[in-house]
Length: 71
Image (tube, helix red, strand yellow):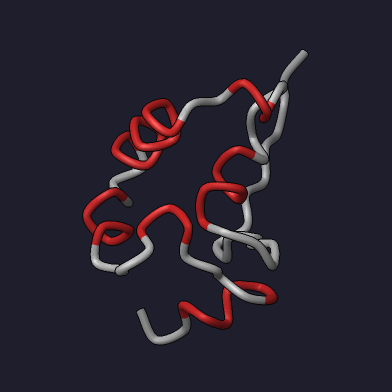
C-alpha cells in the first residue's frame, strides 16, 4: 500500500488574522498560545515576515490573503 499526497503551491488563507490562520491547523485552536503560534511561524520560516507588520500576528490578511498581496 502506498499513499500519494498532493499539496497546492498556493496557500489557502482565510479572511481573518495571521494568528487565526495559523491556529486553523491546530486540533483545539482555542488552546494554542501566542508563543506556540510564533513557534509554528518560526518553523515555517514566516516569523520574520510576520514581524514586519505593525500588528504582527493580529494583522488581517483579508479574503484569500489579499491584504498581503505583493509580499
